[in-house]
Image (cartoon, rainbow, N blue to C red; front, side, top):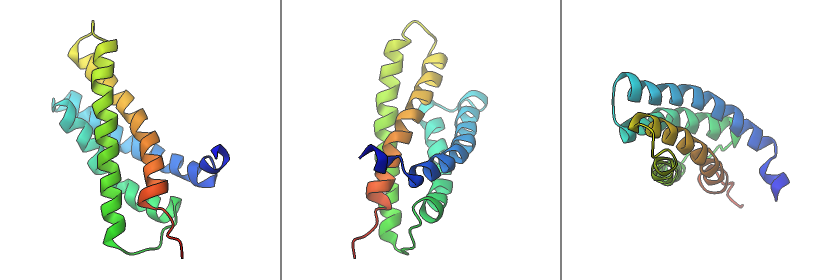
Length: 137
């Protein structure tokens, strides 16, 4: 099972993730720290922009999915949305508790980092086994 999860597809997903991370993280921390947008708006901007890049790179490069269907787009959006809500919904209270003596800015920056890590793992599983799952023919 582990060998199947860590195959060539996994490493392609990681490469695409590096690109998304550079773009999305830059957007997220810029929104939060420079534009002073709140936690939810800043982290959401990361995933709106990153998800557009992710969809095309993962669909065609990582998972080599040739299907042309709105069903795939809808599944991708559902996956990203669920992963985002779970990851950031868990990260914010968890990090706030751990860093309770720190400022809100430190807590929320930390929560965004933890949320990113949780999101990556959940998103990989969701894209591989749900959004871009190869249809049995």
